[in-house]
Image (cartoon, rainbow, N blue to C red):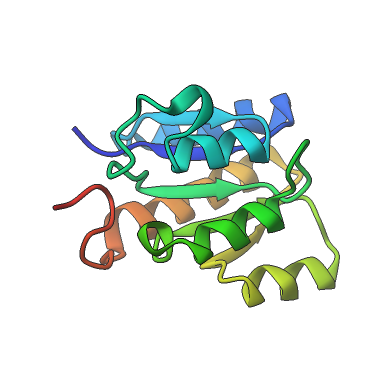
Length: 149
């Protein structure tokens, strides 16, 4: 079984577009959707409501919005990169933010990519296809990532 994709997105319309785009390209990964940064951290570090989850089983990648309730995306990214086990986990910032400071800060904190959400449906589907093709099919993960022994 392939590891899931973790989508951290609080906007239901963007969630639906992302799920539809990934289904159209049939990458074979389930998508776990979480709506805020605190839940994303609980999921990744197997705490709180996800305490029974195996923390060694990492997602194939994280699609991370920046504007999230409770804990913002930049703080989620900082904590992902601060932990040894998740340090090399592919994180793609997928956001509507057009703020240059968000782009710079995302890369400073270790984002693998920064993708602005296209407004047009066709462009959005193409962006999701490109992200999936690169990170799920072409990219070679670091040893020990994606739940590998």
